[in-house]
Length: 366
Image 1 (cartoon, rainbow, N blue to C red):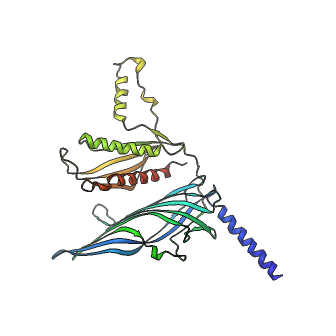
Image 2: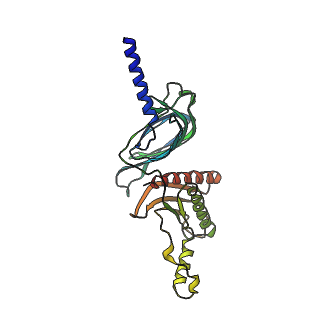
Image 3: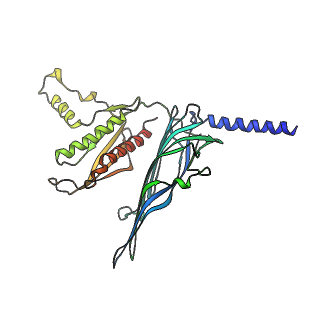
């Protein structure tokens, strides 16, 4: 009798967990959480510059650390087996932007892949006009083949794969005696610390209160703003805009509007409405489609400032504008270009464009 009762309860428990695991990514499941703890080796460089005296430096080329943080989102986007979301935490002292997107297998028993990014900035004091950046951390991680385990998805040694990691932390702290800095740059995953007891990532889905449509029906426009400078750099900025448009055009059911040549088009409309052209060839401005979302790519901080001199460095910042409300979202989507380090120029651009498009996806759902 005891064996029968025990078997009955075991069956109920297994059915319960099977129901949970198969319920993942259903229409009413819009809450997501994840805990990340990946052991890595970084190239650690630190320095202390006293107000008086010589600079002291230290270099550890193989320092072991953990990339650790968590994500919790109540209103992720769901499109069949694909999911994505964003967490934006802004306070007087810090900005913390996390994004994720991934795909669940057809039988819901495996996360085929998930890509996670984090951009974290800590300011020295709440007054940002007088503050300096004390900590700046950027993270990009891709993990594949994460199976279900007791109602959640967990990294499994020998099956799951960490296929891509990018990590950099820049730290500066000023004291009365001097300034201390350190930089940690990713070298490799610390494979020796990963075993069958490791939990590099665990995640799950829960019912959410927000009902999100899984059909994109938006119009997006990419607008490039750059300083008046040499034609070759204006052309490169337009080229970056064109690459961004190309990535947006890969998203099904998304309408991408032409705004790269908006000045020329406006000029044609103004000329048409001046009465100086044949009425049959008039360009009507009222037929221009209005985007739902504008992706505004701006070139900032040109160094040197003289227009006749070649660039040394500049900054690109991308903001999202919700046209209906006028709300502008600045999520620190920033890329710093140093012309003295051209080796990774296009690789950096490619990663930056991917991050911008991934971030924008979170505003393409109703």
